[in-house]
Length: 258
Image (cartoon, rainbow, N blue to C red; front, side, top):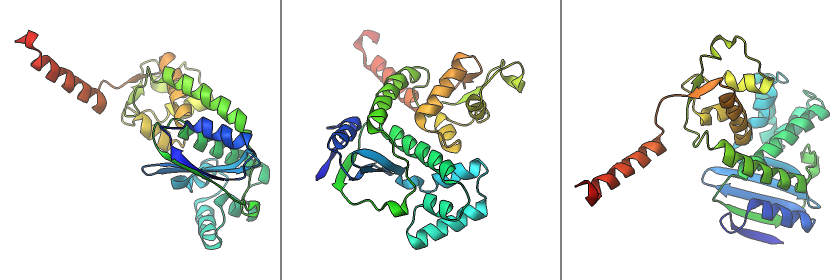
C-alpha cells in the first residue's frame, strides 16, 4: 500500500488512525520546508518515530541527564554513521545506558516528534508498506489510539495557551515576585523553564535550548504567567508590528479621516 497527500487535505490524526485500523507495517514520512518526521509502524502500532533533522537530539537528552559524555556521544555518532545503525542502538550496544532507561527516553523522543508534528498546518506525507528491521532499532511500542486522543487534547489546549503567547517570538522576563527566586514554589519542570527566562530568549529559543516540545514549553510558560512569576518583555513582535502598520495604512486611506 502507498499513500501520499498533503496536510491541508488530511489531518495527521486521520492518517495515523487509518494506518492503525488497517494494521499496517511500514514507514510514514511527513515533511514541510526544512522539517521532516518519520514514523514506523508494525501491525498498526507505532514502534519508532524521529524528527529527521534532530538525529542527535537523543544524544543531547542523554548528555543533559548526565548519562553519557561528549566524547562517548561523538564516538557513538561516528559508529552509527559507519555501521548505519541508529544512535540508540549504538549507545545500548556499547553498554552506556540500560535498555530500560534508553527505551523510556526513546519513547519520550518519539512522542515529542509526533506531538510537534500535529501542530503543522501545512506539509506533505507519504506512507509505504515496508519490512522494518528491528535488529537496528531500540523500540518501545506506542499505542496509536492513545496518541490520537492525546493529540486532540493538546490541540484544544494549545488554542488556550496561545491566547497568552500568540507567537514563539515573544520574550519573557522574571517578575518582581520571582526576582531572586525567594518565596516561590516550583516543580522541577517549572524551574527548568524559569532558568531559561532572561528577557532576551524568545519562546522559540526556550523550546530549542531546553530540548522541549512546543506543547510542553507553552504549558509551563502559561503556568508561570498565571502564577505571576514571569511577564512579557515590553516589546512589539514582528507580527504585531506588521498588523499595526496595516491598520495605520487603512486608517490613512479611510475617507472618514480626511
